[in-house]
Image: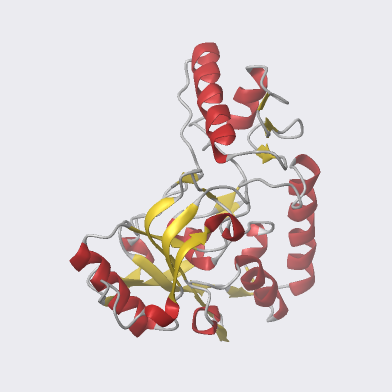
Length: 293
């Protein structure tokens, strides 16, 4: 009998995590679970707690770097149809944690609802977007959240209003809880104007960033107060610097690209080099935006 007895149908052992992240790097997870509903998720987190098993929630891996040794614990992927629910009611949009965030943006505009166009070009799932308060120059998701549905490590469900979520720059107080879904408060507006705004932001972003086809995890570092991380890295003379198969993008210095021969350690080595060089040239300590498992 295993600690996850009865949940074997949703478990893979020694699962390759590289197949589940944008970087396409890293070793396996000891266990990869794909719960099909809230009941299975609740049972799983309760079992993890009882057996002292570390766990992580993985969306589409747009902001994650998995170490070459992998993750010695349970990775929970909310990819079943249950986690892909997206519905609209008047000016509210409810999106489950596994919904592709760009899909929420597009379909909101299709329904004549505005607000999300300012978040054009942000990848990943809704759960990850809420957890890190994803955003850019023109706003963040926390500004549009009415409430968030969460599950505790005891498997209990609760709904938290936005005011209790502690949304800040690339942060929230989701902490050890799991995002189940979010309700967004949008507005009726000029769909054509919003679509034009969406296209403007999309084109602006991808004129200055590596293409989506490049293997990266988006911006590696948070912007320090009053500074742009990419500019600090550029001023430190690091654009185009390589370690093994990893390269600081010549197009935008806050992106690290993984070439075919790259390892996760190559990326980690570049991160360490960048932090050291920026510290020595500007006195500023860069903080990672991507998560390393």
